[in-house]
Length: 545
Image (cartoon, rainbow, N blue to C red; front, side):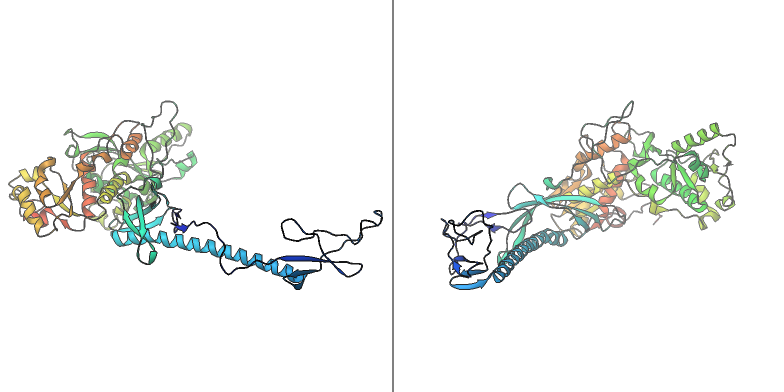
């Protein structure tokens, strides 16, 4: 039985022993010497192998004096099967035969490449047919799997429901088999990140010297994340710049929605004034998102938002770097940096548009709510200062978790958003919410919206994991806590956020849970909302619909 050998990406080829094909013949070539003196043909000596060939000859016999000058003779004719050919004709034939052999070899190599290309077109076609919710951007070179009929394929992609240009990575194992007409087809593919041989190793960070933070064991950086803090460079660069500096106001330790509303107001004003915005990377997490129930200061902006995208799409400088350069300039120069202090939000951006000071320093020392940043963008300012929402994306570290959860369900799932918590307990504002979000009520609603035994992702603030067990009788239920290993102490997220926190572990807090839950919910094929589908109560309370 013929055996098959295969290289990943090529069609199997038969490895039969070589044997002579019927109908072929071999010719015996005889080289005939013609004497340059007499013009007569001479028989060459016969070699032991049966093939006769003369490499050189002499026109003189052995009896003649050896001191006489030798006269060489060259074969001028070749006799093949009784037919005389000129040497030039034979040379032409040999060269032609070599060209044919080289051409045949090139054709063989071309056919191999074409076969490989056709085979590796199968995973691409398979992905396009199965994963319709994602855009495939590029494929990497496939590698062998664990068995001869398996190969591991890696690719980059983005989700169609995500407006960013960010790319994510998956690698899966494909099993091939013969289909119709003896062509190779994808017989089976494994799940998310199953093609481990195609996995690219993470870049290990170098340990810092001195008192710098040490990387946790097994730590590695996502090579596509560059959230290093930019610097102004020389003192000259600092002096040439124009800056808008906001001191802390009443927004500090408020909810994340208010923080974003105020932050984008300040960034929008800086863009309007054509200035660099000085930002504080240290946040205060509101107690509503804290597991401890208290406000937590010292949270890094990069835990929650994409700092790389922000610094590429807006002119910003980190507050610590800015203040150091400012003080350094004032110490080394007699002429201090020109600063204009603005003590009230009532001074509009339009009034500051012609100010030539190096630094415009807005100070928010008034009592609440006069000390909120977003007050700057109210009134007339709202007509010409636009909040640049396109600059603020969720952290790619969090979005990697979103992609992994969605990928684990093969991007084929439905989702339901169940709001409970404090709203379910407030009967005055939401009188029916608690009853409408009981498991029995949810199950009755879902029966008319989601097909049985579909993957169902439940995005919720309900703290009890087993609360939705009744739904498991009809659906394959997935909860965020099912994927807690994605931020556990052996995860990439854990290692990377620890590096940002001087080697100390970072808690996966309430806002991170909300961010991931929301993004996974958006990617569901059928989405069931709390206030649009499960209950008739208004989202913001009674009589607010």
